[in-house]
Length: 412
Image: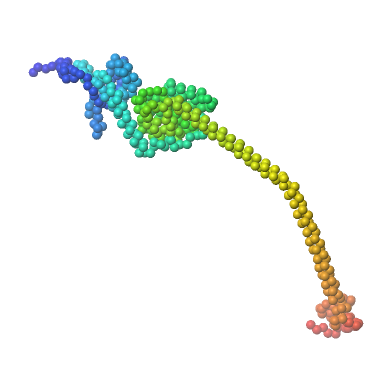
């Protein structure tokens, strides 16, 4: 039985491939892995089962450096956003089989609209999930400080948008002072989500040092916004303890991060303009309040002055009335005292007469006239029998004289 060498077999396969796949074709798949070497892009393409997510097909692909340069001129920065791990893509490929390197797909073009459709579908699902969890408007309900001064900025340090933002604040016509602290993070590519999440977590721990968080980047294409269509970023911002403002937008489109933030703006300078206007309005309110307080104080002082002037006019009249009432009161008091004194003298005279009469009735001679007698012993009145004994001599006084007696018997 005739046998083939491996090379001969592979050459036969190559001829079959060339014969059956002579033209390029569009293929939909997922990028599982992307590597770079000497300007070439090497991709591993897969297809998953829609139900089980198991990989049902796998093949290697390549974009040669000359083809990549051509595609980069055609699609610009959007090409690198689409050619990223885990993205669903639609690729124009030609099938190539090499006797030494085996089967490989040669990528000739990329359908950006297909991937954008996948991004849009993913974005819609994220928005529905955040809406179901009632998170879309939470950050926007946070109260703003009366004035913004301490600003935490998440951006790329070299981004033109950050420089514009900082310059706009520094050159504001009102001379407001803003303290800006940059927390650098990638603003494009697969590092956007993890780096922005990391910086948000750091700022959250230092939240008392800041009035707001600003996420800004420079210009970019519509597809650039897909980096900010992240459920993790959306939830973090929605539940953040500080107001979050974004300047990452596109003139027409809006990212998930824009939707959950307190306010979103199309450009970094628009964010800066809002901060300046907010502080200007706060200053105007303070000035209006100051004018109101000054006017109120002036009105109160004027009213009190008028009241004092009116009162000063009545002081002489009031003093005269008070003096007259005092004089009348003193006269009445003098009359009352005179009457009271006369009455007191009369009452005392009557009391004295009564006492004199009472004293007269108690004199010994008056008592004797009434038939009473007084007995003395050694010139002292005898008050009771206890001081007497048989044989004592006593002297008894009666109305018309006195007589002596000798005690012969004491009766108890």
